[in-house]
Image (cartoon, rainbow, N blue to C red; front, side, top):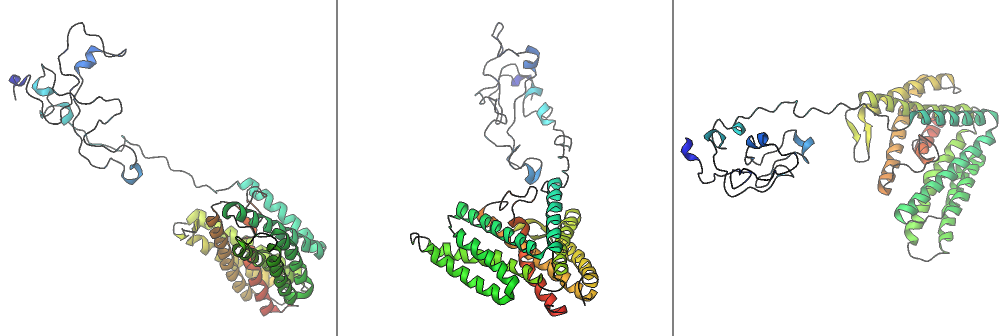
Length: 387
């Protein structure tokens, strides 16, 4: 194409800034108008509809669209190109600046800086609260057993309050708290005084009290309310009763301490190994933060701790029994954690409460302990007796 193409009809894909040439004395287009830059204004070509650079990570920004301006401040294309356009300024000319495309490099879109792994909670507060709770539990455990029974009872009542409150807020399920709290406290005491038979009787009476208490309100929602109440009675106070039953043995304080240590060591091993090496999700739909590597860490840590505890803390215990107890604790603690995670996902909440800074609520600490208590109690009875 030569200079005779000046004033030629518009070509496809040409977007010109105006349909008339520059006229001397025209008002500038804006306060930042510069005649030198105006002469270097280039038409914009139609960009093919292809994905923008960056893949799935940039799918919501930077994508080109055909038939529309690439930038928000562009004006619609005019019908004719400006006169006095040289051949090299035509958009279809091979020497046109727009046809001299430079390959995109990674410098055009720098990769985001890698983010450090986060613990997901306030470790300082979590450690402080954990140490404080440990001191209270150990002191009550080895000084006066009845005080430790009171600690269990308080934890049960607070846990019932948290669970029933969240059920009412998120699902409009009104499980009666009064009979649950009274029955839960009675369950713990009955298990300590009368053993398994006393715990089962107290559980049955608590369920009956929930059914009767709920009859004082309108029948709408009766079935879901009493079902949730019976579930809460079994899930929190009945499972906690097995901790009280461990305490009745001659070495009961050491049995409870072993149970608590194994649960804490299992959780610590899962957290440490999963945070450092975790890549394969264990149950992403339930708890995305848990990994298979974390589970292996929990098993390894708990088995070593179990062997040491059974060998040196439990009367007539041996190290190989501790390996079995430690493995069972790691599995039951993980299942308990996943179980409460399922409940919280159904309720649409992150924590059951805010009572313990860095931990959440009481139930966020009891989630792995509750299902582990009957497992440890049973294995200890089988290995060394109820003594």
